[in-house]
Structures are given as structure tokens and as C-alpha cells.
Image (cartoon, rainbow, N blue to C red; front, side, top):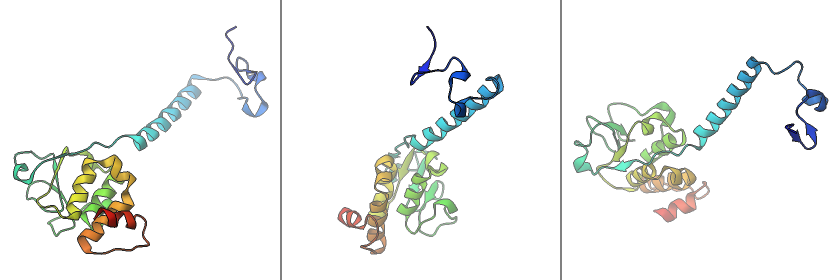
Amino acid sequence: GGRAAVRGISLASPQNLPRHLRMVGSWSSARLAVCAAAAAAAVLVLYRRRRRRKALAFVPWEQVDEAGDAVLVVDCTHPKLQCLTHHKMPYSPPEAIKGDSTSDMVLNALSQDHALVRSVAAVSVNHFDIDAFVSVWSLQNPEIALQYLDALHAASNIGDFRELDLDAPGADLGLKAC
């Protein structure tokens, strides 16, 4: 017939379920709605965790003014566009993503799926040292960057500050990247 069974237990009648799985009363619309809402919330949390982060396009510095306000400028400043840099500027980066280098800030923002990186479509920079390169590359390759966070943090610190802690996670790969 049309009865569902799991490991030989008929689910058509609660009396057939083991006592610890039986529910008192019957399934009401309210109970079903609560269970459906809980399941939907769990799926949404998992989806957000696994959502692919968008890769940003690169805009050459010479074209940044024509590109519009959907450009994030990294490791340098710009008078009109959003900037993310450890260099002195008129405002500070969001507290949640602060770091010693621009790459630290970019990687923190990617790790948190921060609104700053979600709100832009492109990235630009006016120079290419290691910190700028790691920042731009990470925003263009966010999924790979998140897999190599430690090495990218180490590479940016080696390149920008000439600092290396050989005992730090990712230091060996970060050094090789430089």
C-alpha cells in the first residue's frame, strides 16, 4: 500500500514508532509551520556559508574615474571612491575587518563576507607591491584566497613589512609566494 516505512517501522501510525519518537497529539498546522520555518532557517544558514563569493573585475588605475562608484580602491587612497587601505586616510576601515596590512583587511572582509566587498563590482590600485597584489588577487579569486588565508597573510606581511614568523601557519607557503 501507500504506507511509508523506515527500517521496517511504519510511519502511518504514531503507535508504530518507538516511544521516544512518538509525539503527543497530532501534527497541527502550527507545528508543521514551526518545523518548516526551522528547516528553512537551517538551509539558509548553510546556503550563506557555502555561497560563492563574487569575483571582482579589475579596473586599471587610469580608468578608475570613468568606472563609477562600484569600484573598491585598495592599498591606496582615492578622493571619491571607497578605499580599503592601511595607509593614512581620512577615515578608518570598519572595525570588524581591521588589520595591519591592506591584505589583512581584504582577507578579513572576504572571510566575513563583509558588505564592503559585496557592495562593489570591481577593484583597482595605483601600484603593485606584494600587499597590493595579494589584495587585488584575493578579491578576484575569493574562493581560492579563503583556502590559503594563512599563506596570503604571511606573504603580505613579508612583502609589505619584511616580517616573517617561520612558526606561523602558512609562513612557508607565504615565503614561497614572495
